[in-house]
Length: 77
Image 1 (cartoon, rainbow, N blue to C red):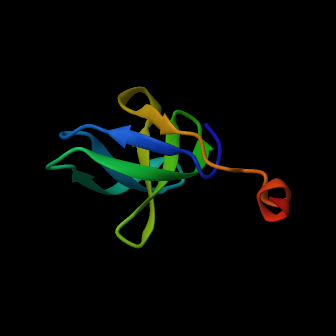
Image 2 (cartoon, helix red, strand yellow; image 1 turned 90 degrees about the vertical axis):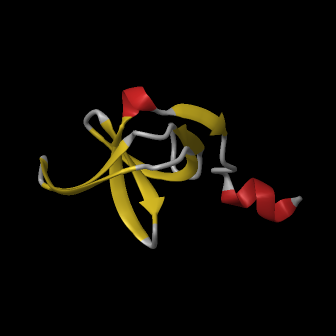
């Protein structure tokens, strides 16, 4: 996955706030949702959720849509 990709996270998936590699806050999704990928760290995707960056495990998500990661190409179209 790359920055700008959209992923599907099912209900029951956990989102984590990490300090280093240690979860200090977490939230369980009550319903499935689409999340924007902001990066990767180890076995987590960084995702944008409720105005900030959270982490979710890679193995619980599915790619929905590739983002347009080539700004120059989209600008020229």
